[in-house]
Length: 157
View 1 (tube, helix red, strand yellow):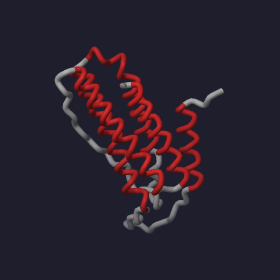
View 2 (spheres, rainbow, N blue to C red):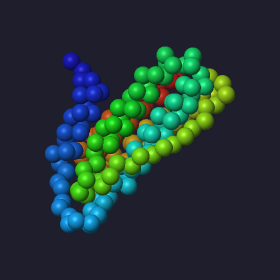
View 3 (tube, one colour):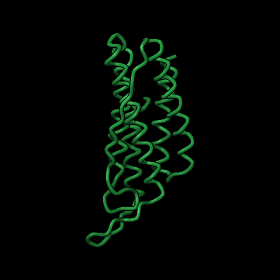
View 4 (tube, rainbow, N blue to C red):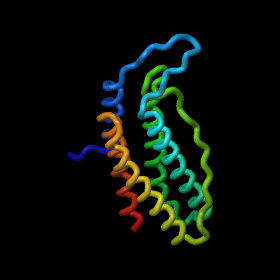
């Protein structure tokens, strides 16, 4: 039986949690962020931007909701899993950023689909690059997300 995306992402979270140690800091001391924090912030911002683009397109082109609704939901799930990777007081992260991106939808449905396809392709390419720069647990999660985004490109073609 093929594992579901949810099972793969859940396993990735468990792997990262077990491979990430916590450091203790005194009152008023901010932990020094590990090298993955900046990258993780960027991935979270990227997922939030994709959701904003989907929201803008779906608001402007309701006829695409059947085709795009489940793809948008994948990004909502990605964002939730990524946000769980922040462990206050650790070198993995300090606080979950709350990006509030906005996006504008192209005027036509074909233009909207093209914009989403392009954004998905860019995100998948970024995830493929990022997996080389992070710990194995986070690498597995980013690879899973990137594969999903690449699948979205194919689905939108």
